[in-house]
Length: 140
Image (cartoon, rainbow, N blue to C red; front, side, top):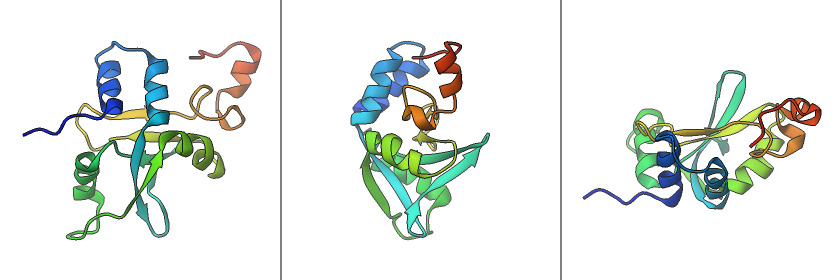
């Protein structure tokens, strides 16, 4: 029997299908508890495209898919349960480099990236803050 999707996973599926409201997706991410792998005393992250991505998972099944490839072998993967809002409002700014949140990266057709832009992370660490101030940015 297939496990029901979390509300965030449902919003991600909508956006990937080209429907749904992007603001509702961001709001759901902020309200959701995400499971973030812990490694060497810190949160697991990856760098790609000049951005450090904190990796979070919507449920234990999604985390387990990730752990198969990146976990400690036959042991369970240590993780922290954090609100999405805490990740993007507190953790991302503390990293001191462009950073965002990557959700369910091991889920085929179910991942979503929340980049370090205005409307997702605090304005002070958004990579598009200068364009937004000039009125040149996309905005949400």
